[in-house]
Image 1 (tube, helix red, strand yellow):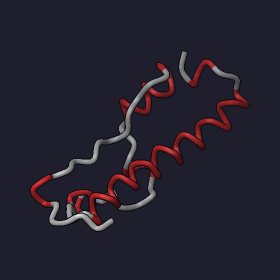
Image 2 (cartoon, one colour):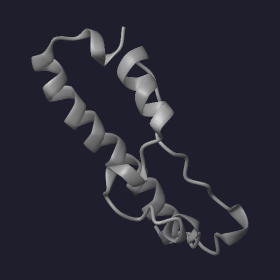
Image 3 (cartoon, helix red, strand yellow):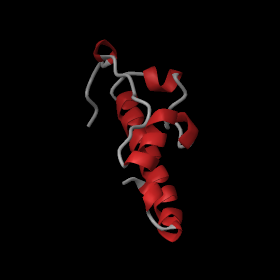
Length: 86
């Protein structure tokens, strides 16, 4: 059902790929919020590419064994956004 049911060779390819993709995706969320004026992710130490700062233990477990999961959420405070810099 999840990644655990696949062959070992495929797991060795998929696990690092998904780990990098989830980490970079969540970093991008934090970076955009930072550029728009919300420093919450910066203060929560999520403005880096360290996967351990972005992965939720339950969500990672569910992704590996069930086929769906989630990383940590980045909290966005709309009151902190001061302007749009695009």
